Image (cartoon, rainbow, N blue to C red; front, side, top):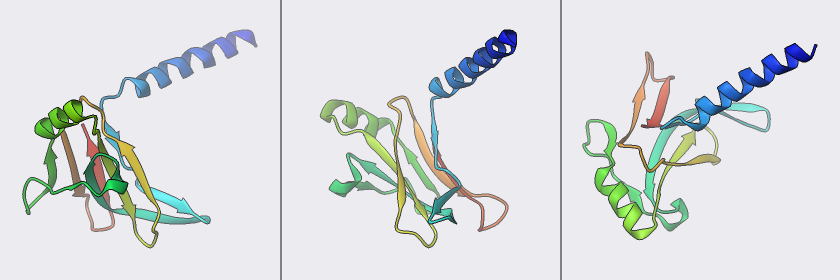
Length: 122
C-alpha cells in the first residue's frame, strides 16, 4: 500500500512540475456558470490590468495575433504586465490570465468549425 502512495506522489510531482514549468497559457475552452456551459468565443489582450482599459489591437486585421516583444519590454520597464482575457458565449464572466514574461506571441484561431475557438500565449 505504501508503495502505491509513493508511486502516486511521484506521478503527481512529475505532473505538477510539468505544469509549473510550462511557458504558455491557454484560455479554457468552456466556462461553467450556474451549471451551464459557455464556450470560448473571443479574447482580448491588455497592457496592465484589464480594468484600466489598456486593450491592445492585434498585429493585423486578418489574424487575431499579437507579437509581444515590444509589449513585454514595456511591461518590464513600467511594471505593467500583459493579461489575456477569455470571453464566453452568453456570459458576462471572463477568465483573466497573466501572460508569462517569456511569452513571445499570443494568438486566437478557429478549429474545424466556428464552434471551436482557441486562444493561447507562448
